[in-house]
Amino acid sequence: MSNRPEPVDPELLRTWSLPDPGDSKKARGDVVVVGGSRGAPGAALLAGEAALRVGAGRVSLAVPGSIDAHVGVALPEAGVYALPESAEDPFEGGLRDRVGSADAVLVGPGFDDPDEARATLLAVASAGAMRLVLDAYALGVLPDIERALLPPEVVLSPNKDELGILLGRDAGDETADVAEVARRFDAVVACYGTVAHPDGRTWHVDEGGAGLGTSGSGDVLAGAIGGFLARGAPVERAAVWGSWTHARAGARLEIRVGLGFLARDLAAELTPTLRDALESGG
Image (tube, rainbow, N blue to C red; front, side):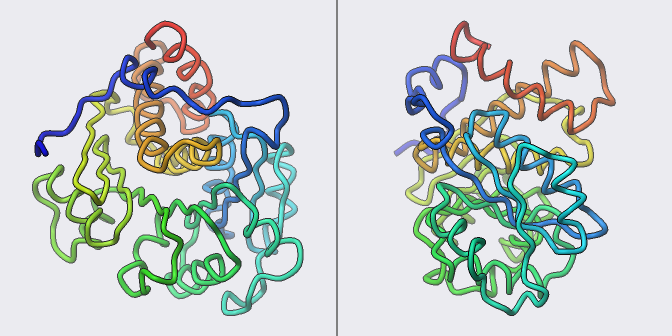
């Protein structure tokens, strides 16, 4: 197997295609975003919107009770659940059912406490989550969590600092480091345009630009990956689709608007970017 990443372009993505969306929101997949805090309530919102923008049918946001009402008003398309008052408490009732039945669960956007993130991730796994996307603080605590406690299908979406935490050292060669993390944690890893599968396959997205370096951009990326995963794409293809669509949307905005677009603009741009990729090459 070649060590050189396979380049990603619309032609490749169209050969992969996407699962038929069916004729109802249920057929398009159900995403639960678990995250948020009083200091960063917008992260879960951006991730949830991104999942909807790439075609997921339903999104629920599980956030601290201190912000659940505000989040529900800000994203009226989403269902909202309050997390347990103590992160050590198990999920119960409707939240447990929703997490256990969701097609994809994203954990981490907006969390600001590592102990809370760790306990919540374990609660999500205990509730029966089938396919996970981990971002932000959920990545920082991952080295302390036994891999067998998590479901088989996991996507990690680190930035370069978080990649170094997962490596246990400073990151160096991007492709080799992303592949190493994929093997170490038996997960698909998407980092700055490089996607690696634990079996050694890698892909690279040669899109994007400086505009992607804006607050909330990573939340949009994680949400997009979760949306493609919920739609039924294989785990590595969901990561590639999400990485390419996110990067290409940023490139389009930088051309049309200029440097300084916001993450909320990026989320909105995902939909036409995906349409154009599927129809005419992006």
